[in-house]
Image (cartoon, rainbow, N blue to C red; front, side, top):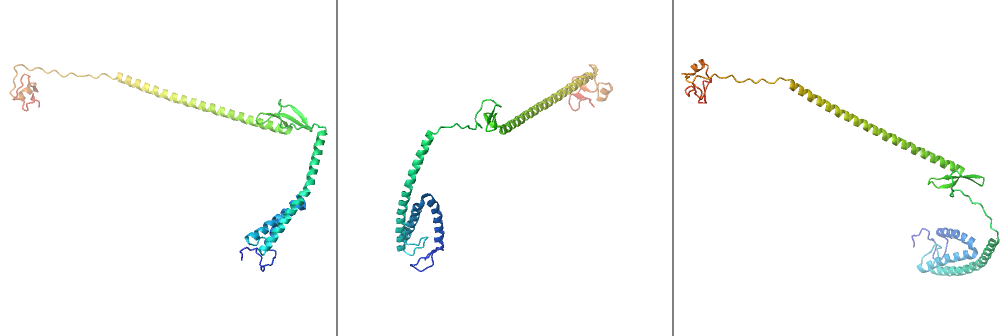
Length: 285
């Protein structure tokens, strides 16, 4: 038993074409048609014999049903032998039919070469379009067309039809104008940026100068005000009238009444009796 859905459901020893057979047969037929047209009957027999030989050998060697659905090895051997015979016959027929054709091809080739050798060559004008030229705007006629020497995108001078030349010139002019406009815009932007920077620098310098002038004026004003102030008057301490050398005070009341208080150590009239706290100053209160 086999799992092939296209396997023939017939009794052993009988052959019945299956769906797979018709599919493969149609494919083989489609392949044979161009070979038959190109090589004739011999080539068709050769291809059929090759297919039959391979199919029979598959069934004979692997003991399996091929796409043809051969029921046993014996039928596979018969198909293989028939395919081999058809292969040999087809090769012989194809070789026999191809020989005259080859000789005729050689003869036609020889006659063609003789004709080409004896024929007088005639000059045919060639289209100069896209070939190099030397002078810009130079014109030339070819088959009722006007060709103009024009510089292409790579700046190489070539012959162009009038329409192509106008188009290329217009595109170049547009590109040049766009480049010039861009250069002008860039220059104007650069000049504006430089002017703005110069104005900003001038404003900053003016501000610094104004601040320096204000600071200088404030310093001068402060100096003038300081100079206008009167000099402070330093009062000298009132002179102390010296006490008489022989002055003696019985107590601080007497010293104060005499206007000699306070009395300092070493001064006339000073005594430790009057200096209770022994700080060198008597009758200070």
